[in-house]
Length: 138
Image 1 (cartoon, helix red, strand yellow):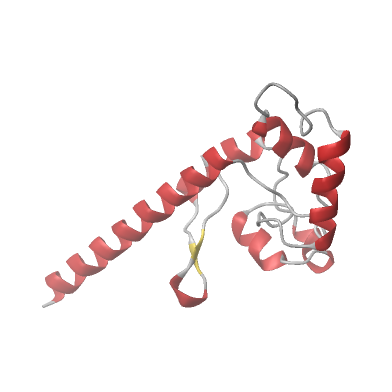
Image 2 (tube, one colour):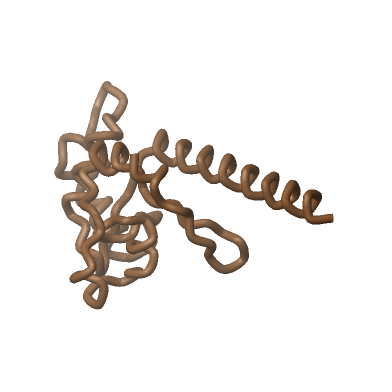
């Protein structure tokens, strides 16, 4: 898994940017980072640290709100009637529309939970090892 090979990157205010694990990229149809796209995409730094072609961020642009509305009306994965939506399929449909300018990658709730867990484990491990190193130094 790619996460195990990469060090999370500190971001302002102590926030960590975790690389997106290969398993999540595969299940969400997220393409890998490509250096050639850096100058062309918004949020290129974030995408580079996440190791994805485009940044994985929440819905935040007018184009994304417009796409969501369109998909709700037109795409079978989004416009369900009696059954619960297949969110994994919705994420794949969404990510096929990502362009790195106005539409960005998304992940499902289960993947977000994995990120939260990995972030907290990494944070605790860093804090613990930092405390241990300080105790050993004194």
